[in-house]
Image (cartoon, rainbow, N blue to C red; front, side, top):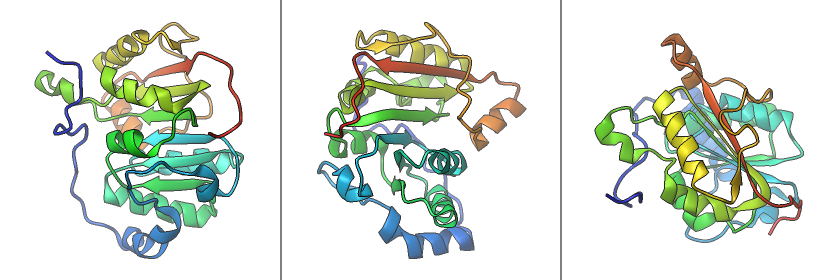
Length: 233
């Protein structure tokens, strides 16, 4: 058995759904300003954001409400949200426009490929992975995003002193995440296990659905060992 994510295995499900009038209009009018097209070339953050602020990426932002709130509350940081579902992209675009967020951009593409092809080495201040698809059936566990090979790809892109912040309402996925993170000597877990929660993270629609099912929310915060610098590579 291999621990790799095969390129032909999707770590997400494309859920079909109609675009609302608001979402459709946002995509038509705002994509050029706020969506970064997928290309197999490294991003230049200074060109994208016009500043040297720390960059944080969120993988799978869903409908984007929490993403927009975090970016709105931290305008001294830059955010790149990665999402494959078009309605969520449209919803977040409308929030970006309403809140006048110049520090938040979107990539509408598979996160695995984006991390591999577009994110420069030692460039991310942080990574948010909130309520990734749990793939709860045993036969589908290999499709989960957070496994050893993905972290192998992701870790070199994070600055020393930077962080990964994950949350899930599926206990066995949370256990898997902890186990995967422990395999990397470069990562340090200040809580040794689950964190008690980070006050600035807003709840998400997936989180609320989990709570309605009486699922316990588990959060994991790990840091890349080393001293954090503010310089962008």
